[in-house]
Length: 314
Image (cartoon, rainbow, N blue to C red; front, side, top):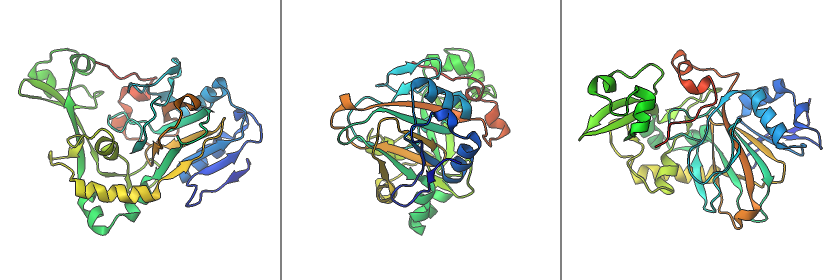
């Protein structure tokens, strides 16, 4: 057994103390057991390099996804290891890639260089958010779903429908491996997918909050993505109450060089505090799909669970 410290309200993650040992000494069985139970792990004091970090991700994951959002540096193209966004602004809480249907199961963050001030990554348990919402707010989300609708580019239509300019028959009959539904509105092709406003994490029966709403509303200043399933906007008044709860629950990780954080992306959200000096902060990421996943037959048809996945880009 590895020396570990259980989570507390101030540190909602299990800490494994490495004492200079290589990552290869970690028991995969123990890691998976702790991950399933708690959903958030900090590995501190281990001897880490890129090879060891990549090997750790391969031990736990069957495939990975490339994050095509801007402002990232590719560290290892074969393994889809990238930096975090290299900007300085604070980020609201979000599950990684929750704006798309291929939201990964798991997130890895490796601190290569730690900032002197600011730049802490923050964590929040989506289960705790739902637990702490008022009954009135819970009721307004409990039976609702979120609609993610965007314009489909020709590149995306080619990837998912086999044609850059699909006819109505193709739009109405996407293949089983396609995660979207399509429609033509005012001459433009739109792609959509729907997810519950409260979802069940992979390893819990309790409902959790874990979607793109906080990031879209409070950083991107977008109110129309996502919406409720019928196109109704999620009101600022309603979402402000969720943010107030998550702000109270959000906890920082004071980075040290060599730290690795592992998050269940189906349960935990993460954000970051404003960075004082971006040249001091270098953090690598890997987003993947776990070998021990509990998923539906429909989910198994999608391409991101078979091999490293690169989303089609415009």
